[in-house]
Length: 358
Image (cartoon, rainbow, N blue to C red; front, side, top):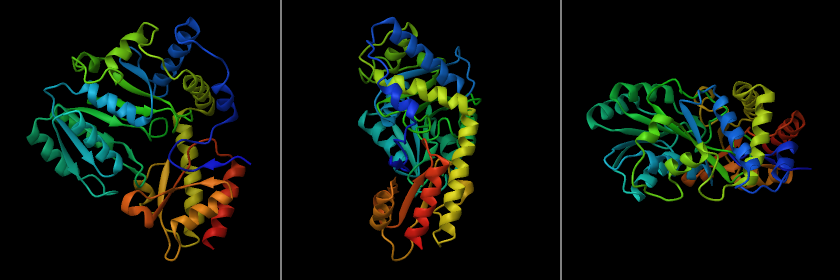
C-alpha cells in the first residue's frame, strides 16, 4: 500500500506523473528538450489564462525557496526599498533573504498565525516610499490564506510592486493577476501542481524584467539570464530535466481535471471531510475555515495527546502528517489535502483518525 503524504509538499504522485519522470533521457541542448520547455511554459501561463505577451514563467532548478530568493534578488533594484509582511515562518524567511543579500527592507511583524493588520500596512506604505512589497499568500505555518487581493490594492495606491510567495497557493487559490501591482509570484512544481521536487519557477510580468538588477546579485538565480535563454529555446545551465518531464504530465492532468478551480473545490471538499471527522472527536481547528487555505488546515492537539502519538498512529496506517513549527510543535498538527488522494484513501484516513482520537 502506497504511503499518502498529507504534509504541505511534496505530494503523493499519480501513476502518470511517476511514469513520466523516467519516460525519456533528454539532453538539454537538443530540440526535444526545447519543445518540452516551451510546452511547459505555455501551460503554466494558461492555468490562470494569462497573456504570454504580458507574463513569462522563468523555470529554475530547486525548491520553492529557490524561486522566492531568485524573485527578490533579481527584481529588487539596488536603490529599491522593500516592505515585508510577516505572520509565519515563510514571511520571516522573506526578511532573511533580503538581509543576506543586503536589500534595504523593513518588516511589519505579526504573531505567527495572526491576520494582517491592513490599516497598519496602509499607514507604513503611505509613509515609507517603498518600491516593492513582499508577502506570502498561503502561510503554511498554520494554513492561513492571507488577503493578497487587498494588499495588491494598497500597493496600487502607493505605487509599490508586489512580489508574492505563491509557493503553496498557485493552482489552488485565486491570485490577483489582474492587479497592475502584482509583478511576480514564486511557485514550486511539487505542491498544488502535483509535480516532483527539484523544479520551481517565477511567473513575472515581462515589464518587471526591464527593471531587473544589474549587475546581478547572483549568477545561478539571475532571472533575467534564465528568461533570456528560455525565450530563445535555450538554458544557461543544466536544468532539472526529469522534473520538467513530470511537470508536463502533471499539467496535462490538471487541465483534464478541469483546471485550478476544480482542484480548489476538490481540496476544499477533502479538507471539510477531515475537519468534520475531527470535530466529532473534539479536535478543533487552529483557524476558522474562512481564514484557511483549501490546501492545508491546522488543528489543536487535544489534551493528553502528543504529536508523536498522532504521527506514529497515522504513519502506521500509511499517512504522513506534519507537526507545528517552532514553539507550536507541542500544540498543533497539520493536514494537507494536496496530491493524488483517492476516495479510498480519504475513507481510510477518516477511519484512522476516528481510531486515533476516539
